[in-house]
Image 1 (cartoon, rainbow, N blue to C red):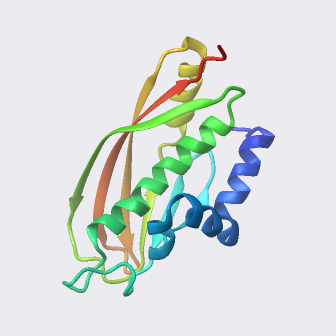
Image 2 (tube, one colour):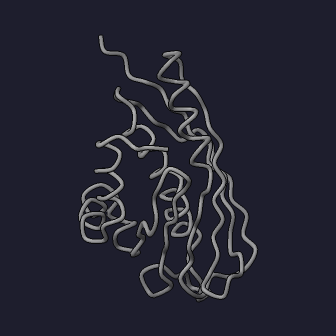
Length: 165
């Protein structure tokens, strides 16, 4: 898929550590404090990482579930923002549902990967064509450095083209 100039600009900003960190301190300070970062973003998918350390851990010496959820949300939300930036009209976005399961304690950097880019771009295109909201269910899987799965999240996003009135 060919991205629009606006989408390419967003992609470049989101994957630039310095620019993304600055933006997160303004808009998502808890995620910035925990060290959440976007490590890959393209039309196919997104990866976001959260380091293990004193800023992200719980009293049980593992990465706090809420910190994992922040990285998981970023891996889906950046895809939604990329797809809406690729559109020629402004969009409203909203998370309608979130579900998570946890399989193993996260004791190293956890990377959350969502590979549903095609579904996101399709939902945005349908919402733009119809003028109605569309929902898209996105799954992201978190694995730590040894390759073991630590958690899995499912986010239901709503996208709707804003009216120009």
